[in-house]
Image (cartoon, rainbow, N blue to C red; front, side, top):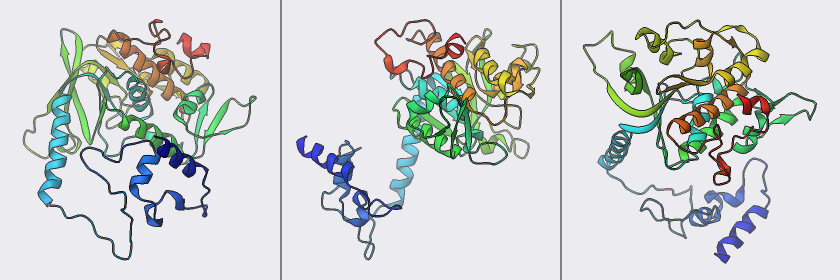
Length: 357
C-alpha cells in the first residue's frame, strides 16, 4: 500500500513535458500499464485478465495478442444476452438517454440496491446535449443547477456571484462526463439502439416497456411482422424529449390508450417560466410512470426553454427521487434519507425553488 501511495504521489506531482501529451501516464513512453492501473487505485487484475508489470508499447514492432474470431463473437453475445436476461424484470426503466434521462440514471445509481435499465433508440446516447443551441458547442446552465456540475466535476466559466448562469465550453463535456459515470455504475445498463415501441399496462398501471431494435422499429412498414421484446419494471421513467419522430412517445402512448385525456404540447419559448415549470411539474403522471425533461412540457403545456439545460438536470434528479419514493427507498423528497445517505442529497437542495418543487 505504501508503494502504491508513493507511485500515486509521484505521478500526481509530475508535470507533463508537453501541453498536449502527458509523458508520465503513457505506455508509449515507457510507463508500464501495470503501474498506470495501480496508480489509479485499481487492481491490475480485472475480469480474469492480468497485465504484465514489464509490458511496454513499442510502436516499431507492435503486435496484438492472438485471438480467435469466435471468442470475440461469444464475448459480445454472452454479455449482452446476460444483460437482457437480467433486465427482463428490473426496478426502473428509463426511456431516453438525453440530459434528463442520464441525470435521472446518475441519481438512481447512487442506491446500489436499485437496478436501472436505460433504453435509448439512438446508437449515440445524449440526445440534444452534445451541443448547445443551433449547433453551437457551448452549454448554458442557469444557477443554482451549477451545483450539479460541481458534483459531477464538470468545469465551467462563471462570471461571479452576480451572474445568474454558468457556461460549459462544450456541451459534450457535460454529456461525456455524466455518461461515463453512469456506465461505470454496476447497477445500470444502457441498451442503446433499442426503441421503446409500447408500454406494458396492467389494470391502469404502467408495468414496463415493449422494446425492439431501433432499426427494426424504423422498418416495420418494409418487412413482414417483426415482433418485439419486453422489459417489466416497477417504475418507468419517460424522458423521450419534446415531440418528434421518437419524441414524447411515452405520453403520446398514454393518450392513445386512454390513460390521459389530452397532450396540449409545449408552448412558445419563455426561459424564465419554462425551467421552473419543468422541475415543478416533473411527476408520476399515471401509476407506474414518471415523466421528466422536455416530455413534461408536452403533457403539461408549459413553455419551451430553448438552449438552457439546468432544468433537464434537476428534473432528472427529481424523477430519480420520485422513483426511489415509489420503490420505498430512501429519497430526498419525503425526508427519509436522514444522515445515512449524504451522497444522495440533491446537489442543488439549498435552493428553495428546487427543494420546494
